[in-house]
Image (cartoon, rainbow, N blue to C red; front, side):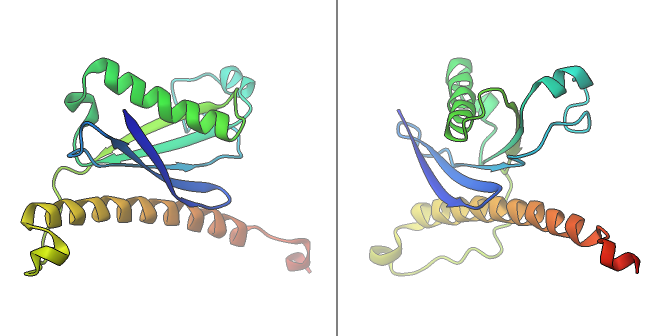
Amino acid sequence: MDNLTRIIRLRDAELWEYEFLDKKEIIIYFSITDLNRKATTHDNPLAIREELDERDNYISIDVHSNLDLKKTLEEDTFDDFITTISSLVEHMHDFHNAHVYTNMHVHEKMNLTDFQLEKDEDLHGDEKEQLYTFKRLWIQQVCFQMIEQHLNRKIKEISKSRFCQDLI
């Protein structure tokens, strides 16, 4: 069993949390970007131009986890996970002919210098719970930063373009 929760939805980006109900130690967030554009050979160097032109849209899914999912999960479970998020995105946006590209990011080693253990265990949980919460929020923050970089790149591309008024 699994649980999907949308954290944020913007015009061209979304952030989701994926939770295995039977594997609580696995932290997974995934971001969806590049929803309304065609794929290029830069996105997928192995694809030929004709194959990419046949697809209506390009969807980039960046999966962030505290463990290497391919090594941690059984093969069937991993395949089901990828199928679930790909299908969710394709049907949610009605992109049945989309090129879905999934990029895995593993965050096994985190900088714990900012982690501060709170003394009140009744309010904050024990050390293990606090560390889990810190890691979960850290991975979520990395996803937010990736989305922010993606959206800022689009803004910079727009600001570099020249309008006809600029030519006068």
